[in-house]
Length: 288
Image (cartoon, rainbow, N blue to C red):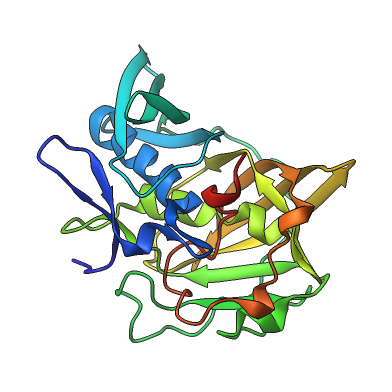
């Protein structure tokens, strides 16, 4: 059970941010991965169903989330035989700061026949790290189309090439190992960083995250690689593939809005912020 987590829980079940949940650019704000995975944990713990695959999670991120208690209120929308849907509202005080929807699909037999696939493979993951089972460890960055080279120096990959990121995500709450679903969601929030990070840093802030999963990750450490960046007149769409040591298992998609006046240059990151869990996010501190 890991010692690094985004939150602790108080007696009421509210999420209390730890230092790992803080934005790397503002100590009074919570980073994006922490917000989306708190929503994911609440939905999974209260509405997860045996035999069902958490197939899609969409979280809308429309307000700053401060380093104050965060409350998740969930509601079952439908509990069908093959499709289950539940919603979550994330509150600070009486203010709604984020909301999400989880769709679960029943696992079953694969249909017969062959279906076209792109055949695309992401680059080989880094060699196994002795610290693989330590949350927040095994952090690597990569760029370029070949995907063989990895390094721990984030600033070295600030360029106009395809980006990729690999780590063992933090636990959500102290004293509780993150589930495979929770780890996938944490990493998927890096879709914005992977798809919108250019040679002068990142100037888009994501307004949401949608993660779609054909299966859950099997390895403790997992990765994400950019698929596409589209933008015009300050509005952007980004997509990325999620992969583990067995291959691609899902996708992430975000929409984002320009924040060029507060461009983030990752070659000038504050030392010691790499383990905050926020390196894969467009910070909640910059949301408007």
